[in-house]
Length: 295
Image (cartoon, rainbow, N blue to C red; front, side, top):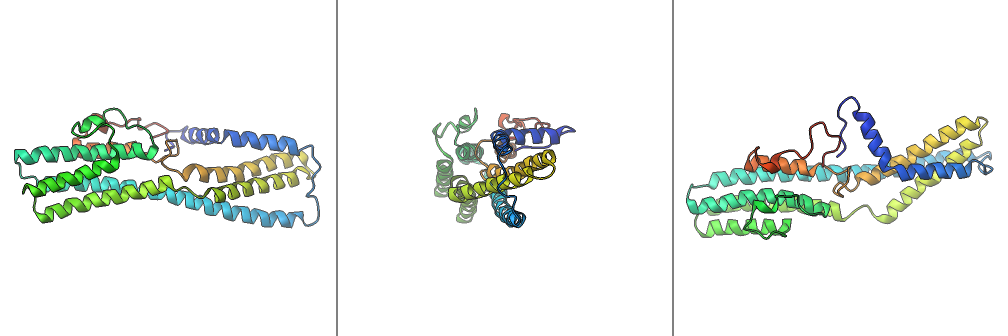
C-alpha cells in the first residue's frame, strides 16, 4: 500500500505511480512522435462534436471501471477488517471458556497460535507466495506446508475435541464455531476478489477506448493554430486519460503482491500482537512508520 509520509511524501507517491506507468508513458511519447508529422484527418467541421461525444463516453466508461476497481479494493480492506475482528473474538471466546485445567490449556494455546498462523498463511495464499519466516514455527503440531483453509479445519477439529472431552458446553461450542465460520466467510470473499478479476474483454475495451480517444484528441490538438501548445496539451490529455485507466487497473487486484496491495502484513502483525503479545517477533512492523510502502 502506497502512503504519503513526510514533506516529500506526495513526490514519492507520484514517482512510484509514474514508475508503474513508465511503459504507458513511453508509449504515449512514441505515439505522439509518430502522429506529429502526419497530416491531421480530423480537421473537419464536425470533428469537435465527435470528439466531445467520444470524450464523454470515454470518461463514463473509465469512471465506471475505476469505481468498480476501488470498490473491490475497499471490499478486500473491509474483509480483512472482519478477519481482525473475528480473530480477536476467537481470543476472547477462548479466554471465556478456559477452565484452567492442564488438558484444556494445551488445546487453547494451540488454537491461539494457529489463529495467528492462519492470518499470516491467508495473506501468503492470497498473494500466492510462501509465508514469511517464522510462521510455520507458530504451530509445530501442524504440517509446515498447510494452507489457510486446512488451518481453519484443524481449528474446528480442536473445538470438537474440547466439546467431546467435556471442557466446553454446547453453547460455547456454537460460539467458537460461529467465529470460525465468520473467518471462513471472510476468507471466501477475499479469494473471490483475488480469483475473479474484472472480465478481460471489458478491460481491453476500456483501455482501447481510452487510447482511441487520446490519439484522436492529440491529432486534433496537434493541428491547431498553436502547434507547440497543442502538442503539450495533447500529451497531457493523453497522460490523464490513459493514466486514469491504468490506475483502475492497478487497484482492481488488491492482493497481487505489488505496491498497490492493501497492507496485509500490517493486519497480520496486529492480530499477532492481540493474541500472542506485542513483544512477539511477528507482531513487530516489517516497515517503519515513515515507510512509503507498507506490505
